[in-house]
Image (cartoon, rainbow over all chains, first blue to last red; front, side, top):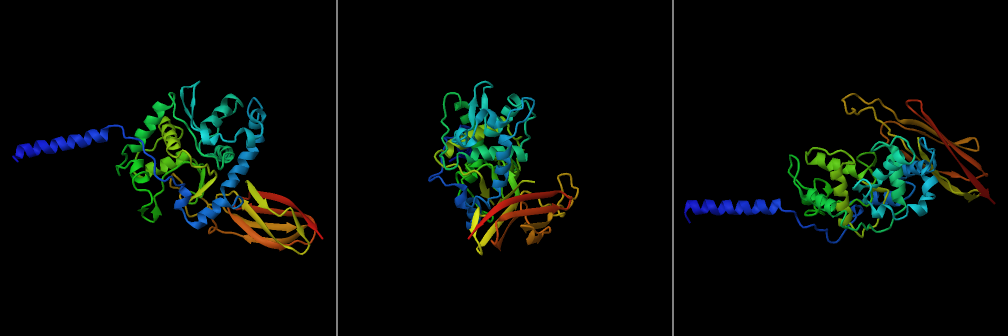
Length: 263
Length: 106
């Protein structure tokens, strides 16, 4: 082989690699699907299982009270329109995020609560990561506990699903890592002392012992982005909503666990 | 401050019952710096008292070694129907209170 043909061959191989990396990946699910709870220790599992000791229940208690409280210029409470959350909100968390046809974008439960607060109650929408928004989100989520996630991808959401999948497989940050490199390709292996989970969203909002507080899925996304030294996207950003939709598809069939407890 | 307490709805006289309480509180240790680099002042629930029909049955003094959202549990003897009242205070002087009724039979 002449040096020239060797060089051309290497160039072609490199180009082939680039084109593979540049093409949209095929979406894949971990096999078998495992909740993040299976990657934690017995103490954490016990804490989540006990409905009194689970610290997330403090936020849910807050959410339950807020559900009944009239708010804003309209003087309406959540219960005023939706009635008992136990019946009206049952199964809702298993169907989100959804396509909001009026605004032609994806919306998650936090977004829906903020929207209701603004347009129906005519009140200031709760800030992301506030105890109020986490409490109400967790309270709504809890009503679907045990129900399998089922978010169908249809003509309206296909575009968002594909954007979410592409983000999932995109390398980012100074560490140059994608979500998939940890949570799809290497789940179950060790990253320092931690076992890498499959990265499902079924238990959110979660009480994370490291945070010493409850946190949303988008906070978790930002933690991962910070971990790979990437630029952090804002909470509620369209990219995060696309990713949330992709995760909902990927974890389809796993039961909702809200309020989850994790290390 | 949101709090939750768990007391059995009813118990037999002389029965040993478990009482549990969880309080939503950041339990700021005083050792941490906030996002702008300033020391976050210590703020923990430093004292919690439980009175059973006016008689103190449990007292806790907590410091910066207790994690956020403290969860405490203790045992007492059910001797008369009545009320358990919890009172607590943090370093900023914020107080909290919760109560629960207990029915004692036999």
